[in-house]
Length: 102
Image: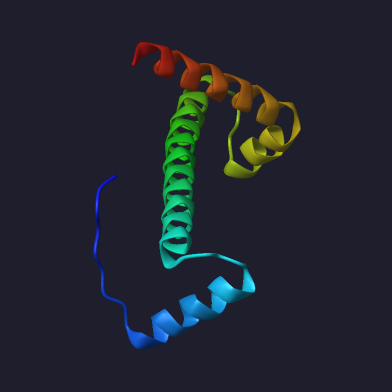
């Protein structure tokens, strides 16, 4: 394991101590490790969501040239129906294809 040292403001340290007691953490190290794990999970989830949003936006752009939608409202109505399921299926296929290519 790598050793990391940090300094905390006294108010943050007091809040950490209070939460440690409330949630039964045995040590500050245990509490900090769990906080870091949770932050990493959230950042990774945000990255996946951004990637999916980019792919969906790209997919929507491809549809504009090949579909009969004249307005954004028409597209949204289609997407809420069968189009949403179709778009999600194609997005999943694209993500799987890219993951295999890595």
